[in-house]
Amino acid sequence: MITDQVTTIVKNEISPYIHEGYIAVDLTAGNGNDTCFLAEKIGVKGKVYAFDVQAIAIEETKKKLEDKHLEDRVLLVHDGHENIDKYIKEKIHVAMLNLGYLPSGDKTIITRPKTTICAIRKVIKLLEIGGVLSIIVYYGHAGGQQEKDSVEEVLQNLDEKKIDVMTISYPNRKSSAPIIYLLYKRGNLDDF
Ligand SMILES: C[S@@+](CC[C@H](N)C(=O)[O-])C[C@H]1O[C@@H](n2cnc3c(N)ncnc32)[C@H](O)[C@@H]1O
Image (tube, rainbow, N blue to C red; front, side, top):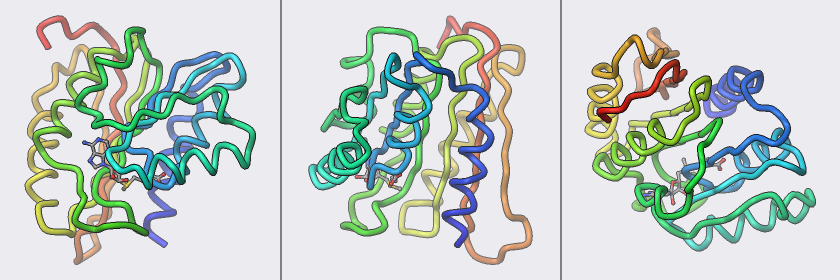
């Protein structure tokens, strides 16, 4: 399945940047898969912050973490990722942002351009130099194209001396196949 493929690519790509004791963020916890992945990677001394606006997503993530005995190293935040700066007062090393809707849930609850862009800007500011942010954009649903356009506009205008932005996509797919963006912070973006 294409979703599994993009998730695997992202995990493989960001894994070398995650070490024991690191601070990680899952900006859209959803079913908790990425939160569990990050929690395993950062080890007992690390910390994961996981955000979601849906109570059901927070519950599902909590259950998955408990099954794997990973709950102690994760702070679950039932709030929008656009408020990340209210909860995180330290520098972060890695963040994952999977846009769209919860596949198993209410498909009308989607990430939206304004809050997505706000979260991306705040995360870039919070990232350590050497840190990485992965973004998967699913845009086949209503409103998805606008979100994709907004994300691209922001990413295209980031200072190339301070941050590398890489894209992985499926150019031969006729439908709206997901797009991966990988951001590697190389310098401080003070004016951000
Ligand atoms: C594609 S799913 C995430 C999948 C998840 N990463 C996983 O591993 O299962 C998108 C999620 O974003 C959540 N969401 C929508 N708007 C949000 C916001 N402003 N802040 C945080 N989460 C949001 C939805 O509730 C949904 O659970």
